[in-house]
Length: 463
Image (cartoon, rainbow, N blue to C red):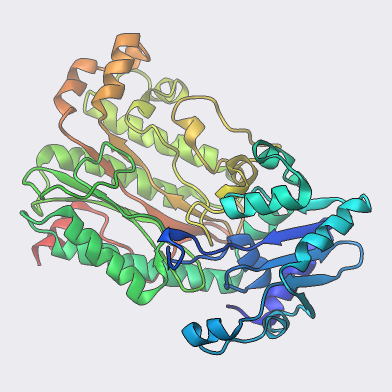
């Protein structure tokens, strides 16, 4: 939790961006795993946390845009709660700690919203993603469950995105902290990996580090020798000689700021010649992004520039053929990299994805492409100082996708499918770092960079 002034300033900035109506903020409630008393690890809604800083369950808030009034809704604990949880601060004291002078029991929220609606006032709400809040919105506003995303306030969404997208100094410090925890997770896995281990052993160690130093992993850990599957959450395989392990994981701090790194390491500690060839292309692409990312260039252009580095490397290995610019213009390299270069990051590992990717990563000047691969780029607009984004190029050999393109003749003029057949057992490689856009360029977040060259990886795994 930051100082009271941080949250007051954020709410004032939000009010300055909007004109009329009331803003409705719904926090999250605890969710049962298999019975009410056994819940998943609790996590506050990021938008509620960003503007109000309170991380307790079952809270809501209102900002009246005309009067400027701010109200927190929540319930004080009763004696049963005190028995199990100990004494807790009153809601009014929690509200005052973040600069809100008014608070009411949660039951009064429905009446407040209903009264505003009856007076013809606009009730702005953000797209809900939790069923509990969907039920609440349906009850208070009569919005159909299938209409909630469409009826969410676009004005509210754009105002929130404009504020959360540019990170404050206090946020950057938390993101550096999250990246330092992420470094420890990955570095430990790199040092521990040995033939004969089960993938799950490494996952458990990494998750333990995330929880011991922060709140939890920032998303379910991806660790797999089947790296051609982009988000593989199965961890049952034994580390086997000749295979690669893609490890995509990050940490979330106790203040809910996230990191997201990927490294690819050889199960045996030694890369084969063929693995080094592909790895070096991905590492060159990753480093190129760091070299050219700066204010005044769009991340779409960064993605395309990176794609040319990748296409040239694949052409040098005779996997692709033809003119590199034409290869990229036609998206032929996306056969090996079917995802975008990166995404925004902050309080969410995919920052504000609940509000809609196109609101976060695109705007009136930059529209999402429909081309395969490029269309999966989550962040495409002009970079500005304070943006935090991931840099995660990858090369994957996905037999089913290769066969599909081969049978359909897709980009056949640029692809040597007979050469690709030799890579069907390869897997995949992804290398991901987190970068902050600065005045004239960018910097890596965190105190140290994870080993990035094949030589560095082999040296660390040998010791």
